[in-house]
Image (cartoon, rainbow, N blue to C red; front, side, top):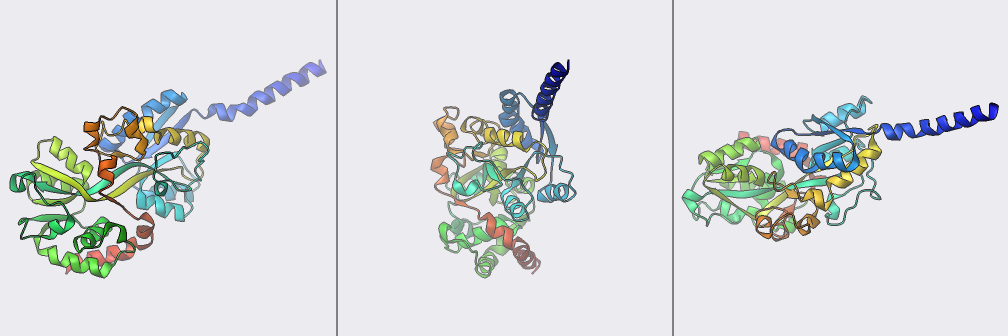
Length: 343
């Protein structure tokens, strides 16, 4: 009896040892809600639930401050969070994220700058030039210098009131090559902005506002996120865009430090950035796959690829936002931008 009891106890201990892993069948994913998160559900979360035989719960967030609050309080409820590129750089510097396991997550097809020790890109979006085709036809401004050229392209303009992206735009308009933008020359950017200021009818504060300006024709030329422009064009707006001198920005994925399901989160992230699931994204929302191999899966037709910002033909025309620069300089340059707008 003693031997049998010992044997049974050993079996129970063995089974118990496997229970924590077996219990990891649910993770929580937090993103920005709206059409973007709805697209993520269909493109990524639904397939991953079936592939890993798990449940993925969802929540919404407002940015890195929400992740910071959970980590600092030792009350982490999210296993994967979707953040903006600059937020990922900031959170990484603060030690808010678990390291990513690149023996699990494969980065073939992903720009090395978009896969760091503790965050990895998930989608690209671009800040681009959009114009009113009723005013300019299909031959609207093709460069930021054109955007600034009020003689060649008379009409009203709109730019973001945010320093990031707008400073890069102002420098390109002033002749700075895309690969020479950083570190940004803030004095030169502000002087450039001063030349166009009187033609700017609105300094937009949200993606929705920029889209409305383009849709209503209140601004003839708009610096806008490609997804917002694409949505209003599909909705019937008389507008067009160019990817020339576009500025690549990203959303990225992180595992908040203290996640109770980090191992399973690593597997889910690996699938989220895989070519097959990345190729699902453009059909659902106007954002580009972070993984260039998505264009080799056969899911994206050559015709569809011509309209996707991260397709090779369009990516070659654009530059990457430098997230580390904005991590270190956002507060200071935002203050300078605000002062400029109040002048």
